[in-house]
Amino acid sequence: MGAPQAARVVRVAHTAQLDPADLVDARALMDVAFGEPVPDGSGSDDGGFEDADWTHALGGMHALVRVDGVLVAHGSLVQRRLLVGSGADARSLRCGYVEAVATHPGHRRRGHAAAVMAALEAFAPAYDVLALGASDEGVPLYAARGWVPWSGPTSVLGPTGPERTVDDDGSVHVLLGELALDVDAALACDWRDGDVW
Image (tube, rainbow, N blue to C red):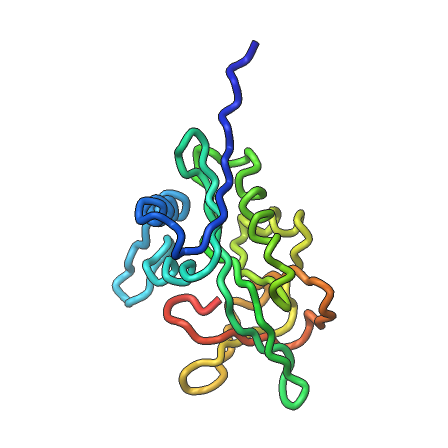
């Protein structure tokens, strides 16, 4: 007989409902999963998960996966506004935006990230669309769950007006619901500090 499987517990709660220890654990998981930022002296970073990235994950719903009491995976869903199209045909959409999806390196390939995504995707009926900025490593997970890349040009509604985000073209993924959207159209997000997508 093999060793018993550890019990996976998925908890879904709003930021305001989480204990301070939950938030500390989740923030620490981000550094373990993504690595800490390494400044290059130019004011930008060479990777990792910054404090601004963490603030993007707050103020919405969190899915936390614990195994034997240890946090092994996390993701959150926050509300944002997306502008689809341009000119008189542009539409403002209420978007559920997925942030801070991470699994501890020692617990990957066990379905924890899929459990996080399933918990967050359950909120899809509350939004016009769900969206996220996908890393190359995350694309297979999202594609298997029905997320599709936005193929149109991306931009941000910045403090001085619209700004193209060419580096993010192709990395934004959406989970289309019943709302018919043209994924070849222009897509703009609201402004925020740090990575806008």
